[in-house]
Amino acid sequence: MDPRTPSGNFWRSLKQPILALAPMEGYTDCAFRMMARECGADLVYTEFVSSDAIAHRAPTAFKKMAFDPREQPVLCQIFGKDPDAFVAAAREVQARGFAGIDINLGCPAHKVVRSGTGVALMRNPEYVKKLVAATIDAVTIPVSLKMRASIRKERKEIAPGTPERTTALDLMEALEGMPIAAVMVHGRSYEDGFEGPVDISMIRAVKERFKGIVLANGGVTTPERAKELMDATGADGVGIARGALGQPWIFDQIRSYLARGRYDTPSIAQLRSIILRHAELAESTKGPHGIIELRKHCASYIRGYPNASMLRSRLVRVTTRQEIADILDELTDET
Image (tube, rainbow, N blue to C red; front, side):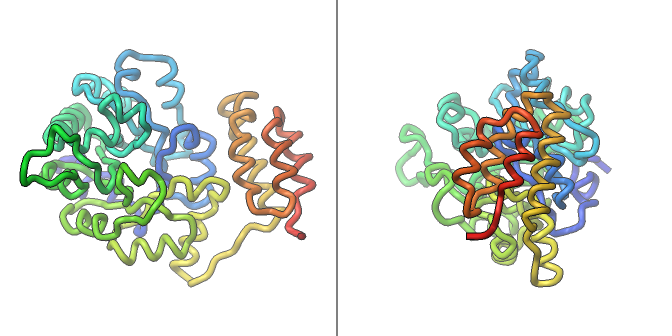
């Protein structure tokens, strides 16, 4: 059996629903991925890494690819558009021990789209097929995809009587029969960015068409929303990105809600312990600079608390774990 087919890789060993920490540039580093795993995530994705940078063995790319065995299963997400670079990158990803490789077809950042990568690749399903085939042929670890619900075609590509948009379903139809292990579908179009309603029907259509694992993504910020999205789409699980910022425990909450119809929210004492655990991981993986990078996470963790504004102004200047601990001693849920 081909180890890359849906029935022959780690994806099929995961108990459904599958709860994944979706990739986020600047956020899903090693420390945050370990936090997500400790808080119930079934698998985690790296920040996206340039296939060209990996192929050229750029130290910055290898730095982003660093992971801890405790994260497993961890997937390395790559982006780019050169098939040869994809082959070289895929082989490097496998050599470094990742559980799988994920191809980014969904990033909406203007710089990425202007370069013809990320979600821009969706405009050319046949070219995507070439990239995916090259990647699959280069490795034995499972290959998965991350995409968006749709993207408007460039005006020059719209012939009379043809659709003006390329959808996730169009893409999956073009890739039909390929040994792709899983797909994650962000239910918003490229043009909608991270706002607006999630296209439930598109995720459901992909799930009906594709025989492998489908994860629904977009707008999951609560356990209730996770259940609604899975029920409405039939997806095998959810990928949570921004919804995990400041609340990595959302994975445990979702599992509790699905099993018992309720979930707990961390107390102030528990929140303090979680943040300090994150700080410990950040420092152990990146040294003192890890605390600097943690500042944005600290701000997210205390969002919504009565004295959060005052404490946030101090947390964004911390340089040590002790400073974080001292500031958190002042955190309160009393109005």
